[in-house]
Image (tube, rainbow, N blue to C red; front, side, top):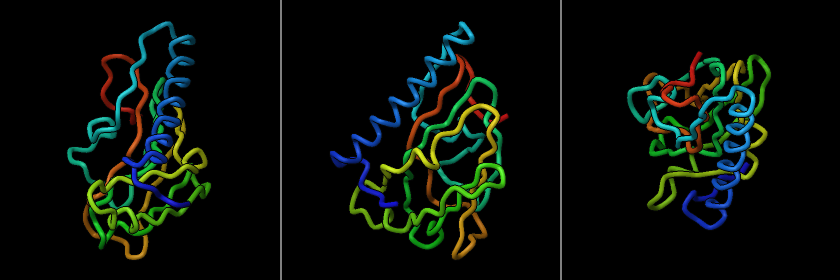
Length: 159
């Protein structure tokens, strides 16, 4: 997995693909439920966080009629945000080296064309994240780049 700058032409194409996937999921939910479904860029409130930082480890279930499509990360932490392990339940999906993103000159957002293997989460799925090597003892100055899909008026995708 190789992260490229999110503001580069390649990065913009990756973000557009993630947005297209979010649109497809939203349409499927809307067709199934007969209700308005929204797509937003991921913000802390969507994940029940209060700041644009990530916990050293976190596990949560995606709520009904919601989805998370992330294609990369913001990373301004060259000390703690090194390797992020992603699991679906107990199934290992990926270990992502986020350190190179912190080295990007201005835009500290990196995206990966391989995000479809680890970044698409739908209702009822259990997402498990954990930073490794070293395991941080406090929140990490890193956050998701991507989109949430949720019913109109809902603010949090966690079950």
